[in-house]
Length: 354
Image 1 (cartoon, rainbow, N blue to C red):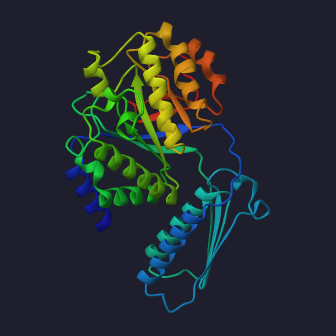
Image 2 (cartoon, one colour):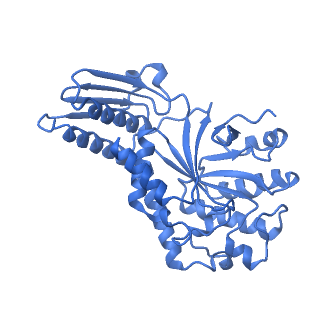
Image 3 (cartoon, one colour):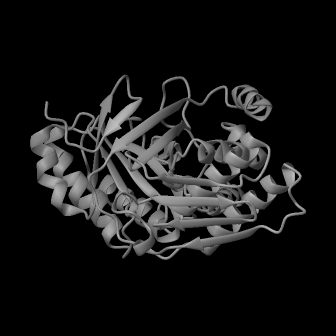
């Protein structure tokens, strides 16, 4: 509890200009079974061993086994992040449907050991989530304005790796599995462009490289904890430098050939470099509804498809009516529609019936 209090205090002190929103997305999608991620398993095992030492049980030889065997799991656990956990004095056995299940089983083992101040002699737990996606949005924006360059001057907390580790561990403990980095148009700040130099004219190559490397590190740390990174962006927005160079408004309602080429290039360049980062698309605030189908399908989706990758994509039902949602739903595999509830704190995959 002391650690959590210190964490909350530190986080509030350093993230004074960022807003956190907790999101839960109901999903009916099915997910293919994948091999367990060795990096995540090694990290999970290390957390269990640390917990064992913390309760002075290090003299006991602890055997930790990870399995991914459907025949050992009840039907109710044969889905994303499902697991069973068995602890018997000197043996901890985890059977997980996937890497997420292994991570959360290990987290449950750690919490059980620390709460009981010992390694239990006879403990068994089965668990699987009711909500497939459970996440947090971290807003890289200020004062109600979306468009800011992502730099240490604007968002110093974003570059604090110690704070990130504390935050990611907090998320894992609460079984959150994604975080959305929220910015008007973030792509240009993380990859070096071969085209449109004006889009990055206000950032040094060194700063872009630092952002690039930080994001790679953040993705790797998230994977260890079953946390996916997503980028939210608005439409039509550009980098602050592109906006200035072309004397554009911060929020643009009508596409132009230049904006289509620029947006397609920036998204494609980013996804090619970071295929594991998902997209969280806001079709508004300003994009005219008459242009939305073309913009979403032929600019954003096509830019992603042309990379050969299929990152997770969430589509917000914000200024996007049901009739338009139906026109794009089949144009990207596994597309998630997000409906807002409760002042943006809870979202739903189902298309807004209103």
